[in-house]
Image (cartoon, rainbow, N blue to C red):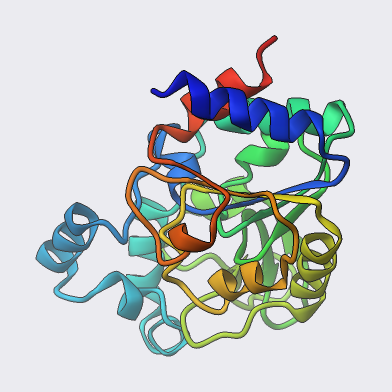
Amino acid sequence: MSGDKIQKLKDMLRSSKYVVFFGGAGVSTESNIPDFRSEDGIYKTLTKYGRSPEELLSHTFFMSHPEEFFDYYRNNLIFAQARPNRAHMALAELEKRSTLKSVVTQNIDGLHQMAGSREVQELHGSVYRNYCMKCQEKYGLEYVANYPETVPKCNKCGGIVRPDVVLYEEGLDMRIVSRAVSHIQKADMLIVGGTSLAVYPAAGLIDYYSGDKLVLINKSSTPYDRRADLVINESIGKVLGEAVSD
């Protein structure tokens, strides 16, 4: 890894007062949570279920085939044993130093909070939050993960308990989007990591950044590389880990 780029990243962080991090699935793959959008993930899904992840995780499929939905969801989106990696820990440390003001994430695994981050905007929700579709009673991850039947039911009214995650065909929570946009607009430095910036509307949030310290950390190139002030094609855990070390 280029020492010059790490040094530049450190210098940028030192000279910034309002840093925002925007991250995707690549942040969590280093915690052994697979990216189901990868070729391998999609191939495995097609082989076992005969459908794409996008179809299995759509609102339509959830409503019409709840048993198959929960079978796929439990086996492919819940990773209760996963723990924060160097990237999560580094971001929590930057928040502790009052340099980082917010994490905006497309992930639903709760690892940023587990690492100690407090200001986290979860664009796609969280597996740790679940609610009854009938009476709105709230449930934790264990209830859904360990429910004795395939489709978890509310112990108060018998309604289906669904994860508070944004499925395909569903809109994002505009209150969370609004908070994310507000932080990005105020940022004097925006770090984007672990995302190919291919999923909209989330990827479009970068357009709200108007500063001159846009950093992209991703193993492969993205459509925004030309606009970035610094591009690092390396492991995000290693990069951020080294950036916060003295």
